[in-house]
Image 1 (cartoon, rainbow, N blue to C red):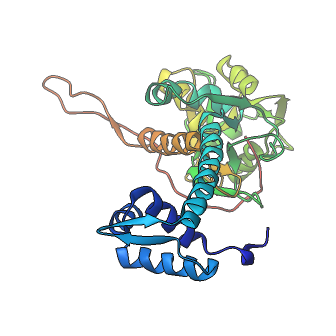
Image 2: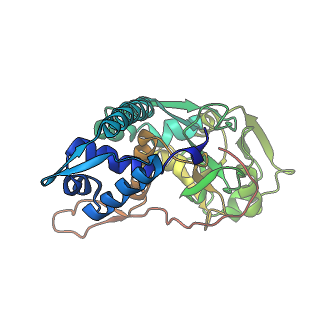
Length: 326
């Protein structure tokens, strides 16, 4: 289309409003401009066509024959544009929101909380795609990915979500060691890792564990690792976010807690560009849910006794370390 052969869209829009409203003032109110601005657009169009399009009739404006012809064409054209915009907008609003995340994060953190999102947004079709593989957001049609790593994913928009510290965990009664040094000195432990991640080894090395000298078993997923730890088969290094329910229930105990996240954590990852309304709603809910989960919690006061605080992780946003997903 040769846009130079057409008058300005602003002038055409003003004339369409004038044709429908019948006066310069009413058209100006619809467009939120002055009646003088509408009159200026009318004069520009009349200069372009070299003939009058509207004439004053008292306080109103009466279209000429050419004005009626232009108004009919504009009405049909703008109606088609409006129909196309509405179809695309409705399709975008109704399209399922696809979320990629690891099975461990889905099972341990998201599913216990997702009911709150469904209650708030029953109209949104949320589809979870659990996988340990690093999804290609565009190729796989992913709206939002929740990834674990250092935040270095080129070509994507990345927002820190939860930079959780790490802990060494085991089943209750697994070891009588009272500290990390005593635990390592026992030299009889099996460490469990997931083949899908590298963070666990990184954290272990950071606290002085020589895995060349330790017995190590690798399992296909972190869910299996957690199952082995709950069964009392050995030790594991885990992000606090994933084992917090087990620590709270007593299924696992923390034998050592790292002092920070070492630059690793969960991130919201999206494709560059505009998110659908449903994806925006889920992202906003996700941010709020993580903030709520990380707020300090307190137990109800015991009669004739003080309130007992429950310790929670402090969230520190840092970004450095090997790129990874968990």
